[in-house]
Length: 136
Image (cartoon, rainbow, N blue to C red; front, side, top):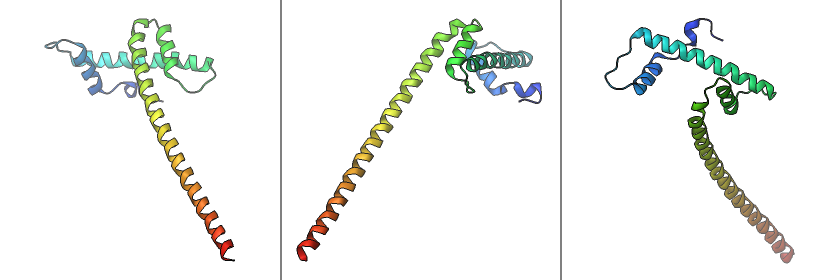
């Protein structure tokens, strides 16, 4: 937990970048305005986290997940922001699924190669036994 209120604020560089991306060129923002936006953003994050944790607790989980945050956003009446978040979440999930599929295919291929190698070793061992029997 944060010991001081300042510890809860987002980094100034992040806030400045977000502000610059949101405003048209030529618009200046005072230092006090940036600090106020930073504090407001921190309060929003804390509130969203608190609401999200409630959904996790209802589901008897200790881990806050994206679904909890989405439900919190809805409860906080930020519904209009959910669609872009869901699109991003869906595209990230597709990427994760693709990576998992690739890893699974690689693992399957490795297993097949190991099984083939093991079978070859067993056959070599059997052939050696047969050769020894023939010699005796």
